[in-house]
Length: 322
Ligand SMILES: Cc1cc2nc3c(=O)[nH]c(=O)nc-3n(C[C@H](O)[C@H](O)[C@H](O)COP(=O)(O)O)c2cc1C
Image 1 (cartoon, rainbow, N blue to C red):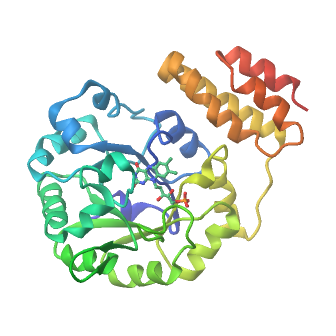
Image 2 (cartoon, protein in one colour):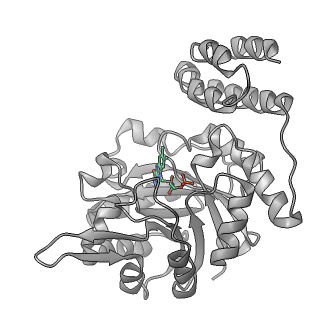
């Protein structure tokens, strides 16, 4: 059956899941400036199962503007899956992604994220539980490998994982081209991503180290993936989507002007203020620092931007920037 994954352009550009970043406001900014599909921040199956108020907040999104939207979930208890899947489907998400790539302490401490690959049977049980419960397409996100330390150390690879789930109806796989041990700075392993594209029977999204339109082209040329997942390269630059798209299609792209960045930063501020109120004004500060990083007077502006409390104040500061 055809799903939204099949209807996306090729190559398509995705906002990768980023806890603390990929909230509704940021997703809307990314879609407005060229993303073809967006992932949410990760949410725990357990937290949905037990209905924690903070987690229920994470199910909110703009049903008109944020499409297609994939919610990312993590956990290792198959018994929590059914209720969580029901909740996210009722909330209207277009797809469900399972996190097998995250090394964050809060996830790994519970044996979730990438460390779940050390127990491939349990990893499979999680995928099976989700594919059985879900009516929307299911995807997974993972890394190239993780070391399993036993009497005989063995590296569990993305290919072991793909083999383990090959009979399950998983529509898409986002591969972050670094191992668990490679953290967030090791070079991207394009060969592994290319092999994943050749091995996995579904849509493959290459992720890792795409900070410029040229790096988007490099990922595409070296791996032949169907889509590209952008993450930290988007800090203060949701318009990287548009630039990457122009470069992939025409071999050139336009630089953005300070005036355009100011406009985009104000739009983002307004959205966060509208969606999160006071805490949104706190959260926008880090984004503002990213928007104006690298400009000649950045240090002076930064001192003001880290203290902003209202949209008006942000607009006032931006007016003084030349
Ligand atoms: C702040 C932050 C939060 C992240 N949160 C998640 C997450 O919730 N789920 C996930 O699968 N990956 C998460 N990631 C990993 C990214 O999706 C991506 O795989 C990684 O940053 C590599 O891409 P990049 O080199 O383009 O940043 C996170 C990364 C960062 C920097």
